[in-house]
Image (cartoon, rainbow, N blue to C red; front, side):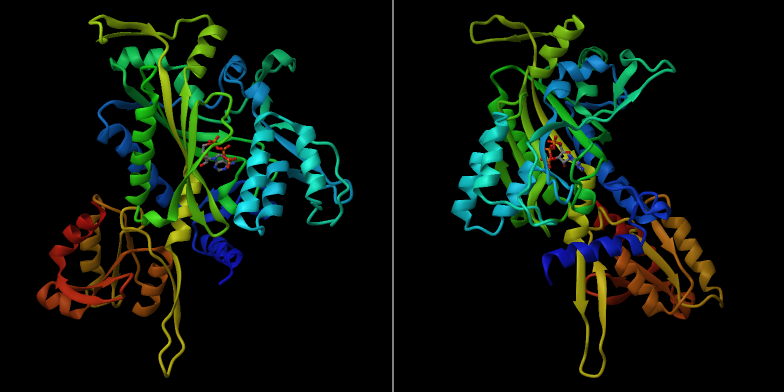
Length: 480
Ligand code: ATP
């Protein structure tokens, strides 16, 4: 199947089964904004929970916070977002379409031989880093890039476009009241550094984790929930002693890669991409990329942010953001006062969801000689599956629903169950396959006699008869 078709099939599946809907769909939708439906929200909560536990429970030196979306406007001045959170863009005068310059060039060179492509992309990254807009313009001309819609090379000049959304606070519409919707959650952690360090009595090295919404006015939104204007991030800032960033960088790269694999995705689907051109705040940075249907793309960023953010906030706010380190150095003296360095891990929750959907989505041909048959199944790891167990009485009578309800009550506090009486058992199994439910249990007349049930495994479609009182433990074991 062509790769675009795969993404298209996943988008349709996500909508049909209540994972993800276009926002405000009855008004034709809002570009690059999506809503999570009943199944999607369960999937999302499971991933958040796994990440949160991994960060704040598994690592004893990480605590969490939940900071606000609105922040003082000076935050974004100090962080560099007002001046440098820009994407260069270009318009085609004939089609009136606007493009991100890097996307336009990347798409154009996608089909070139690997070596030639890498040379062009490296040159492009250097120019992006140096904000060499003229150079980029020349490159577009040199490569004879045309607009995919108008097919002409009638381009405007390249301009920088700030990605932050702004709004006004209060009733007086003057400039002093202009504030931004946060484009990243990280700054909420930096401005709370002292509050958290003092109240949680943490010593360096320690981390602060946060999950929350972020907003970016992306010029070109594409790839479904891969690039949205409103999205959710899961970020962790790890505060360290200056000079130790290399070892922590390596540690967090490996740690995060292992975590992604723990969601049931094999190693060959990931790769690291080291940044040639570093952002204004970083001295080392890489992306963990996942092999989406549209190719390897950034899933998570690992950034060594030095003391850039805390130092700038200290200057802008005139409040000390230093830390006194009592640990003794090689000369037997305390390290003393310094502004900590920061190692950041930043993953997009929606990109994680898309990764899990892409990996899980499978079309299977089950045809036999006499009968055509197929199924769509989402092969989620039981840990992330929105529903863990479907409880299905074979009929609506003879006391079977009552037994099924009992099993439901016994399991419902432990994990998410689903109860369904309608349709044939075969249809119900297929629906559960499409939702990614790893286990179905059928209660039939034999259950009344010997307390056994049929358990049906989603991936193999095998069925076996086991005592009903073993079901809860079986599911619990699978999601541990
Ligand atoms: P890209 O190069 O794809 O625009 P970025 O390098 O700007 O991403 P970061 O600023 O490092 O992204 O943000 C950290 C993470 O937040 C990314 O790795 C990604 O998972 C997620 N993210 C960033 N922008 C978006 C978006 N528009 N929609 C969904 N997730 C996003």
